[in-house]
Image (cartoon, rainbow, N blue to C red; front, top):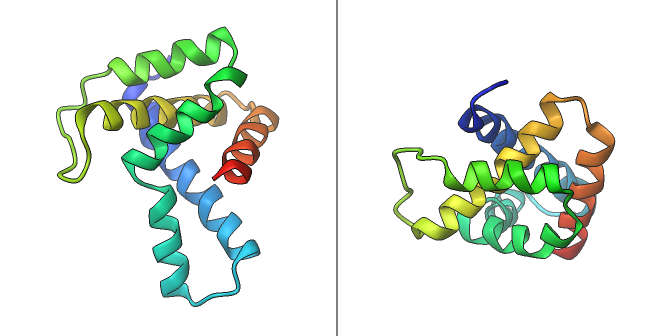
Length: 119
């Protein structure tokens, strides 16, 4: 099994890829505006809120991954995020990385669709 922060590391990229793809297909704007819109999704505060919105749909196993990610000690906290938000964001990223690396692409897409439609 991979360390939880490795799952969060890849999960961050997965989340960013889904968000950017979603914005490309739903926004007819410049690349700069796409970037500005993506920032509203891809930050600790937004990801923490996102986790709040989807927690009720997670399985026990998925909640365990989120909890492990949330409790992991990363050693760094971004300047613009509070610790609680950052940890919850890490939990969400851990879940996405776990689903991706375990080949659960259908579940990953289901969760990301829910996230993107509720944002």
